[in-house]
Image (cartoon, rainbow, N blue to C red; front, side, top):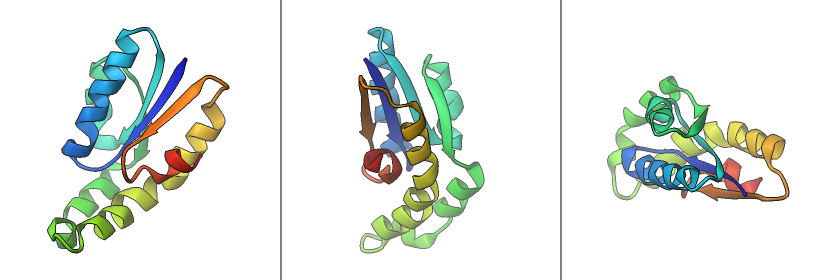
Length: 116
């Protein structure tokens, strides 16, 4: 079985999926982790094949958006800053690498992987 896991957002969004990817990999499943640039090296440190789908610049820019931290505006800011810019990269990766036995797991705003 082959797993493609896509997690974008802040640490609270990404770190739980790194743990899932690590465990699937430990159990012998082919696992690829799609994520934002700041978490690539951490995922690789846990023996998970990793693919960057959002640049560090886009990530940092989104974190600086004050709307991200407002209760009524945060989700829209996250979608605009994290979800939409990574959509094509995640979608293209899944379409190119998915096989008959592939399971795709995506965090809440990993739209590209979830739509593929």
